[in-house]
Image (cartoon, rainbow, N blue to C red; front, side):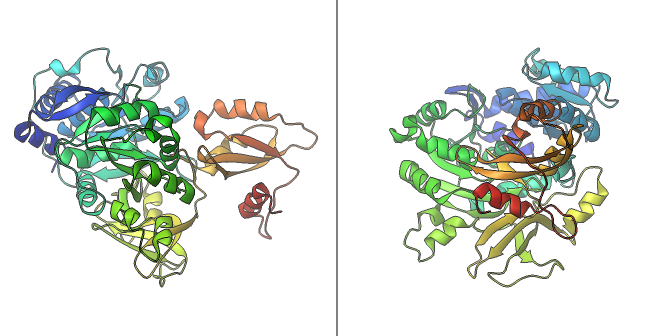
Length: 507
């Protein structure tokens, strides 16, 4: 089983159907995409000497080459390592070294940061700038047959320890994810399309697979990112479009005049996820787009798959518990088992709060080179999500809190401990606690409560510059509160609940 076989099949059976577009312009049909994948794979294998299961990193903004390289890598039996292109250079270095990447592709906006890393990372043989040369001119090779358990995608997600962890996603994981999408979320047909406005390195990248399975077209915006005005134009230029969007993106789309004043005829489905969608924002989105929204709850360790709230549920306005269901994340997906458990992993009754655990064919094989983290996350095959939720009598899951204190800002994950550890390196900082604060634009933003050395006046601007030297810009706190002490319990644990109350003005 090789997930690239989906693209090979399309190249034979639906060769003339559009496969890849940049903006309104079709670049490749499925026959051409399959051929380019075989030729680029030939370059990777015969020119660069890569072997099956070698890791290849992609530090790239959204662009047509992203899809070509991803498919070619799978075609050659390689393990692809998509990396968030917004990360800090030090974070790039850690992921490249930890994954043992032998090759890294980088777009021009990141090449100056990435290229020098090859001198310090033993495994990294070469950093290639995307677009510097056409890799699709080599002789084609045959697709490598891989085992279902072979790792196709090494997905790095930041962890509460402050170090990213690589979730090993197999070819079987990705195929199961695609099949569940068709059953539990939405239908796709040849001639439909997916618009990659969110980063292909994580959220939007997962949608490549089900759309490839249905021979749909992959659309890359010319801007390479999220621009509501540009998206409104593409909703006129293409048909049957699905777009994945974080809740903050959905809100901005629903408020943009280009979409409010149009019928958006090419838009079929907006799938939202990655954070809570406020009821008022969801109502506005329904008003602008109609009942074309669906929700998915998953994690990097089980991509796109734990629960789903499909378009039918969003449109079922006459149901007596309609608003309750809109506040939920839906029902367990077909390929999954899901339950809520207590601290002893005992299943809880309907309505009781506990940790959400999930089991199924989309759950990762484990964390790359991290047996301890794997044992902690996977117990008897059950993925412990760290999310606190409850299931109602109809099987709808509602999330109430995140036990790992994850902050989701604009759809991007920010782990407080990672930011706290950076701030604690500053010589003037004694203690720090980072929490999320609600924000109209981003959903949440990180806020830091800082205790300084006695007699030292810490400048927030200084702390901000310090953070920018160590972590990605989007992770740094948006506000700093200088306090004399942090609230703690009898055991010395910082009480983040009290800090959240302070932000709300409750105390």
